[in-house]
Amino acid sequence: MGYWDATDNHLAEHGAPPTCPYCEQQMFAMGDHGRFGCSFSMFSASLDVVTGRFTSHAAAIPQVDTTGMPDKEKARVPPLNRLGSPPTAAEAKLLALMAGGPDVVNSPEYAAAVRAVEAERGATS
Image (tube, rainbow, N blue to C red):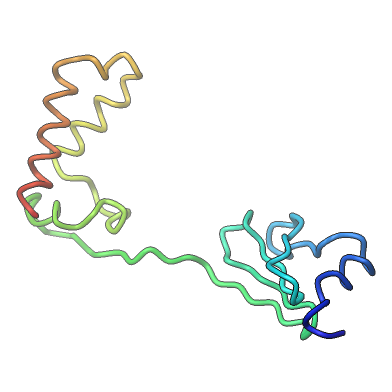
């Protein structure tokens, strides 16, 4: 099996792309060279049908320990990079308001909470 026709050969022989061993969903062809990928699992997975090599790795979001940081300093760290830490006071207020449902979006309290979070983050740029 040559790389130039490996995808076509695999599909002709097996009738379908391979199945991802992690999520058990059908993988997709990543070109003509026998590589198939998976977009369903939390892993970035690919299979090379010529070599039989399966590779995967979990996407990692770098995390910053914000334990003991004041809110002003914590606001410098994007929320995605401090998932295990409690939110700042302004973020907590906004999240509490958001938990009230979609009707709260038109309230003056919500607008004030959004401005407070924006000011907190704007002060860091």
